[in-house]
Length: 431
Image 1 (spheres, rainbow, N blue to C red):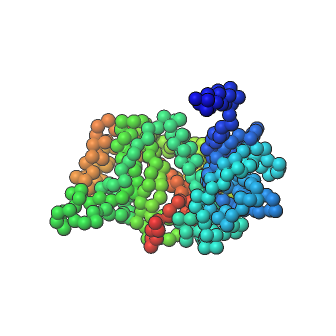
Image 2 (image 1 turned 180 degrees about the vertical axis):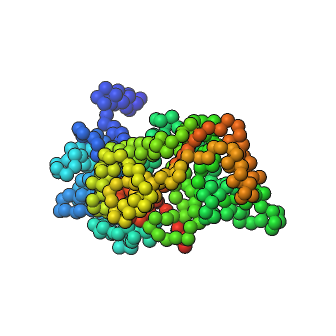
Image 3 (image 1 turned 30 degrees about the vertical axis):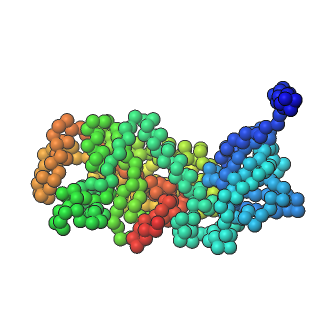
């Protein structure tokens, strides 16, 4: 009984004096940790991959990155934490106090209290080497690992931000987002560079197809957007497109992303070009605002001089010139954009990249389309397209922008294969 009374008394004393308790540790991304302005020893947990290790007599310095920013967070630990498992590329979880850094290079650092290695990395066998600036061509050999480098990390963060910026522009300007199909029976471009889709095993008989008509991977969402523009004044889509183009050039991919828009009640190319220009500038300005370090890395180490060219593009209006003049500008690698009108169509050409935008006013006259389809023997297949002109047609137009080429343009990346996570091109479909 006496022992029970003493235990009860001890518990009462604990409740009044406040017994020490383990501190709660908030999980924090590296980017958010680096943005803390007044660090006062908050207990936080950071997870990521080691980018560098520096061991001194009494202190161990680690730099940990989780992909949320170009800059890594410095971890300061007692030398007793030093371990063979703490190598470049290893994944770790670090718990400690976020404090003001004594170094002028960073605002804060994490004073480690606990370091747990989640997955070790064989540094000698790892094809990406610490402090070595690998060429982008070399990194293409390792599509499963190249995203861990500073260069690809920056490019892919810019890609993510540009995606959000494009959606933001269209939303702010009243466009309706349409999910156009990846599988289609239409050849929108008419170039015949189609991937035909068939089941891997025959369903019934060798002469029967899954859809009853030939089906292909889409080369463009234009025709489906034209359908939707008959109900919504302004529509857009943003998704993958496919071209079976037998080319390994630095400008072509078999799978790439397209931004496409269709606008009703448009009667002049000038109105269409204004939307193109606004989309480019609004998207680019948002990317520069949200990813300045990532863009700067590309301009500094991948494309020297691109910063000045991009500033010129944003400050000046796009030029409307003849097709012959545009070709000459491309040859001379001018800094200007060049719109090339062709009948009721227009292309936006960028030096070093080629065609970035392509757009046109659509033919809305029923009788003209009917005659052309009849001459080509396509009236039955495209009766639905004639119906669009028959039931409440309006003048309309649209454009498409190659997303990877856009990234090449603003970052100065020479090869289109380096601005997409997993490039697909002829004779290459890794992963």
